[in-house]
Length: 167
Length: 361
Ligand SMILES: Cc1cc2nc3c(=O)[nH]c(=O)nc-3n(C[C@H](O)[C@H](O)[C@H](O)COP(=O)(O)OP(=O)(O)OC[C@H]3O[C@@H](n4cnc5c(N)ncnc54)[C@H](O)[C@@H]3O)c2cc1C
Ligand code: SF4
Ligand code: SF4
Image (cartoon, rainbow over all chains, first blue to last red; front, side, top):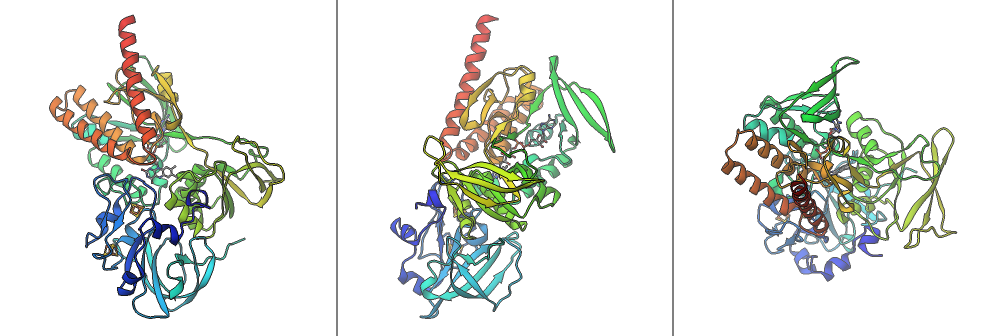
């Protein structure tokens, strides 16, 4: 099903349109990906990047474009995005595991070191992960940024913590 | 409030009347970070934008009557107000301003199906007011009807408040709101049923289940595709329409445009309606968004300040031009073209109407 019918993006599609960092780039260090592929009038990600690695331009409805070479993976853009659509991926520090940093705006009880289920873009539990970092800055204005470590093969898929449906 | 701020900062004496217990309209329920340009405080939560506007009003000495309803506009710009004067005490007051800005916002569209009057079936806006303003959870198992931005955002906020979203039903074959809003929900495992509609709701004391079914492109339902979902709340997000009662009563001319939510008063580029002295701004002249409402308010506020002699024309022109520039930017992009056209149509309709009236008169 297409994104517009299901609401679920795929890594393949992001790669196809050139919005996904290369394996090589992810091996070099953390890097941001804007999973924002629909023209909407929005640009806070662009102004949030201290390294000017995200460009949208004059017309704020253009898609954000990350210059992988400039991106340091600092993560400032994650909580700045109104669409909660920016993630920082890292496949550089191990051959077995990598990490995904994502925005999180729910109440939580987990702590650094906890093992939790990891969910893909459709909410399906695809593997387990270890919480590596939980960041709440004043600038992030109540959007928590969680870094989850998962088997390296799942870095491209994991985008949240798995949530058991309440019914 | 935006019109009030512009006018008051030029020196105009302003009174704001609002039926709510807090001025700021929808903004005080919008706990999410807003879209738009970072120049326009995008990335800031709606509730904080509302707070800033309110503080600015207070700073400028704008008088605000809360819990007070404007019930009618009569000849010569007289406004009847049911003003709150104390606990459980209201008094009818006639206000006679030189200029009026109508910014009454919009009201929710209903969807009718057997069972829609059961307790627990409500507008998504009502659900949002309950969680974000009154801090009460309307229910634990919610079905949302409509996948526009309102349906998606309110579903997300219901989840943040601790409810489970049993599903989002959308009759169109595609999600109507922004994909990023939808993705926020899908990665939490929320099913979005595109190409489905709600058939009926069952329940004794309150809604306990909803029946949904697939629809054909002509919106007829496909027998055999029914699905029963256990719910205790149905939140309807089927669009908004401009609240035009006051404008209509005052004799302002309206036009119909489905991209703006239906009938809405036409106006000139200063936001003045066909009734001289009555201005309009925001969702009440076409359902859009907070940023556009704020800019339209600025247009009305500066125009009023200029026409009352508080701003010289050059200064007012420059402010108006800048606001139009920003509006143009806000109405660009995939979801903006239809709105731009519809807004242009309103301006044309105003010009035509005034010309016709000139010929007759
Ligand atoms: C769920 C949801 C999410 C949204 N998200 C965004 C977003 O991300 N970005 C964005 O830019 N916009 C967003 N919006 C839209 C935005 O909130 C509205 O477009 C904006 O608030 C419109 O402002 P307004 O002043 O025209 O109307 P409103 O905010 O609706 O204010 C109208 C006010 O008039 C009062 N009133 C009405 N009739 C009377 C009367 N007769 N007498 C006295 N008072 C009266 C009401 O009580 C109310 O306070 C969202 C809206 C909703 C519902
Ligand atoms: S991770 Fe840091 S450097 Fe990279 S795009 Fe985001 S803000 Fe810029
Ligand atoms: S802030 Fe987020 S939603 Fe807005 S353009 Fe950037 S990536 Fe897209």
